[in-house]
Image 1 (cartoon, helix red, strand yellow):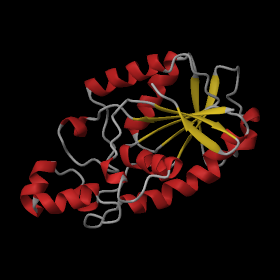
Image 2 (tube, helix red, strand yellow):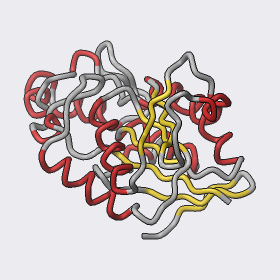
Image 3 (cartoon, rainbow, N blue to C red):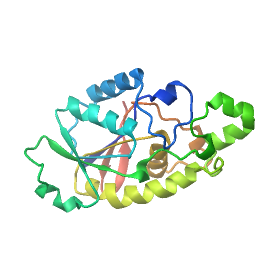
Image 4 (cartoon, rainbow, N blue to C red):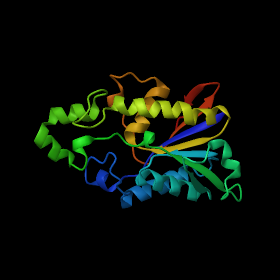
Length: 222
């Protein structure tokens, strides 16, 4: 049996300002740093073998804070180093080091023209109903942006091809990413219907834990 832990990054500066961040590389807020540390303390007893994150700083810093509380040194592996060559990584010194893989496939949903806008200001420009549809529907994208369905279609193939194989080898995995990329993973794991996923919200810095055995995910109660 293996463990999968999903963590949405701590609050970012633009979460605090109620702005659409998307792929803009926004840092954590002071509250976000505290959330990451609280999450790290909650996960202190977990033993992870491998970590995955996005290309965005707010997720990577959250992951680094989690690993630091476990006295782990996360080593970012780049595209020219294959997973099966981790044991030969020249920086590998002892068991405290752990591989981290980052991918744009785990990035937040791309919000297109909405990126950087205050959400209330966007409602005043486009109308409250339209902004609600862009934010919460499964398959309607904002101008020049992605829908949740688009995010799902890039996140789930990466999840199946790169993350599930570790789980099948009884490796414990942590993914630190974003609200919409992780909602996509949870939709896939739990079989949430298209019409129900808009109602599902994922809090910043709040881990979701699954046990994985024989191809099945079982969600742990907190």
